[in-house]
Image (cartoon, rainbow, N blue to C red; front, top):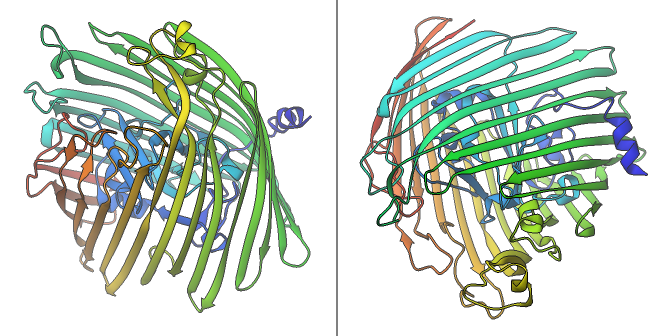
Length: 613
């Protein structure tokens, strides 16, 4: 029956989180906007001010400031870029853009490719680290990232030029008043690039257009209508495996990307009751022009969902909701579709010093059946400004459409499952004069999906899947420590520091690689920044990113050496409208690799101007 309730709710339909709450706000904890201190889970929010200080269109320059995050990129900007959280693979991290699930259902592991993003259209990035499938269902095993696009009250524009003949431009315009908040933002990148193959000499270029819009209209004091949309169109040059050697080298290969999503909805808020309902669509298409391996991949999902919160006596509140999703994919010669419905509820106590929340979720998938998920978290103010946090969360990831329905599919696959535990202590919020956070966590996973090759082994399913098939076999553990420190040393002088220790292990019984580290998961990562701003409009900044050793493959046979990257930034506000800025990336011209065999950027300088009113 809940299926029809969601379809009815979609006529109201939802958009993005509430826009008018003070302090640091999270939506990833419960699905509705609430203060970060109302959850015991680890949440970090990066705002537009910090994004502009970092400079550049590449969103990884911002995300790498978050603890517990890793990313891999197979070539220059515009190449496949994947995010990992707390040692989890990219397919186990859910990415939302203005509340729309952006993970691509056509990919074998349903990841989201960060290369689709441009900081020009982003207002904030919120990352919840740890399982939260009670609220978000499938894919929220490692974490949940919510990206909110810009609402500009006025207009702004910028242009920059620099290394690899990269031209970057952005523009944003909008208005906010008591009745209407609406804005458009856009970004453009055109880069000559560098060789995708580390051994190559041919430059691989990149061009992409990004457009985002978001609006909210207050019909009454209690009812708001909302809408948002985004569009990405790009083309990137890649390398391949040309004859006669068929090894990774320079090749005439390109990939075209077209991705769009949209959502319409309404928010009803009368204080003791808040309802947020919506209908969204997300579609991603890739076409590869590879003479040896041409491909065309298209994934689409449509979703109706409802989030609600009701205030109860005794400082209690009930968060609830449900959704229904239709998804399909095409990856020639394969195609398929599935649907899934769910309901969830969380009961929370929100006292003056103690916060405790617990809840559960039920999913009903058209192919693998039903799945229950449980989670709980709490926080206690042990002293003014100091919070002790703890959380337990179960995560699950449904088998992807490709894993279920392709020529390598296995209809008997079970969802991947995880149990996560964490405890932490924090003081203040990010951006405060003093901000401290320390978290220890462990996540155990089972039923991890792997590929069985019928060329190197035999199994009954090889009779109908002669090249191989996906199957449940894996177990794994990821555990570690995350630390964040933010300090305001003096007026205009501040620093930030983040350290992550991540220990991963393949714990699959009988696996030849049992005991090995997960691929491309460095144990140690440090990011730090120092910023100074004068009263005369001059600002200087320095960033450093240190990444420890890692292995490129599951056998731990290929090592990725540690590296340290430094950036220098500067900006000068000429007047209220004009700002000059520039930076030097990789100031030490470090030769490094984040994926074996793929090229990375050397030292590069960029200069630009920004206008705003």
